[in-house]
Length: 442
Ligand code: ASP
Image (cartoon, rainbow, N blue to C red; front, side, top):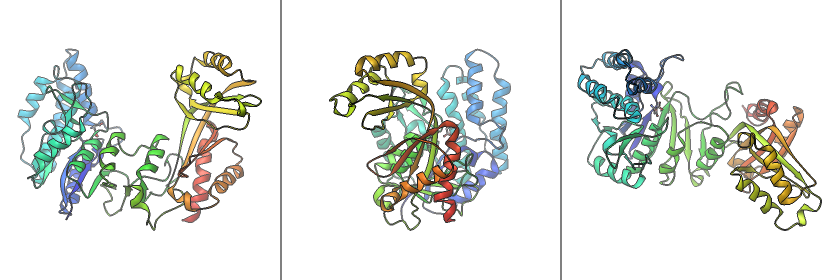
């Protein structure tokens, strides 16, 4: 019997009804012994997350303004939950302490109380041990989480504990100050707990039934990805997929622990399993393409020079210009006498002339220009390695939709085909690749 660490996001714990669903999920599997909750999130689209209410309270408190009405609203949310769960639990002591500390204990302390209080309530409801994350998640005084220290503390504290609730998002620095991760950081806490316990799986419960093949704002009702590798997820996240907090991957990935994204509102769905490459080899659900992502906001710096290919050091000199100006190079497609550098358009803004002058000086090109409004599209899939003709199908579908391809880049891993298109073609391009590879197989 292995241990499962289960993290529930804010929308999964937004009110008593949601917490009951989460509790039923936890109780339905005896392996689900360690729970990492977020603070209560939105109950409806215009609602405010408790974390945001706390930030707002802190702003007022730090300016010496009256924050009592805001604080009362937060209290009300917890008492509604407590009542809805049928608990007789008083948080008066905790609220009094938080109120007294609010102005001087710092913004991160204030924000962390959302998870802290929710952890106490959920532990009481489940009858699990409450473990304050401040005692087990260790930060440096600069606010960087210290992984080795954290994992050691977690192991020590949890070694004889049968069931526990460990609130997400925060910890304590070496000198005793409460610190938080960046937004969405409860994912990181869950990952650290899973790592410390050598969990069999890290379940991340949210309000969608897994990672979708494409952005649902672009493609109607896209299908869920059943299994994705960490590498594929990284490629897609880089291009804008937001699945988990970035720092949540490393602790479990290096320990070979899979992450399962699940839906609290639809627990019968299998969700998406995120696994290491080797664990994905025998996957019967494998499609040629795992996911399609796109991102706007790039520019191409196009250079042309006769006999460029025989000029030793040409590329190095070009890259030095970008490095000297601190501009990150995203992609570098090239031809015999042409070279393009794709970069973040925002990094070039206001510096176009300076960049062009530096390039002229460094490599004396016959022609150099900056082409704005470029979007990049990533077609990602470990299945591409075994399927011939994938690139042909991608480009045929784009050609069919009359989309002009500006750049093509395929990494040596054959995991990812990156296509540059004009920004206004991006959504259409995603849709036609989805139709060609996914919709047509359903
Ligand atoms: N409650 C925090 C936030 O809203 C952390 C989390 O939910 O993961 O960002």
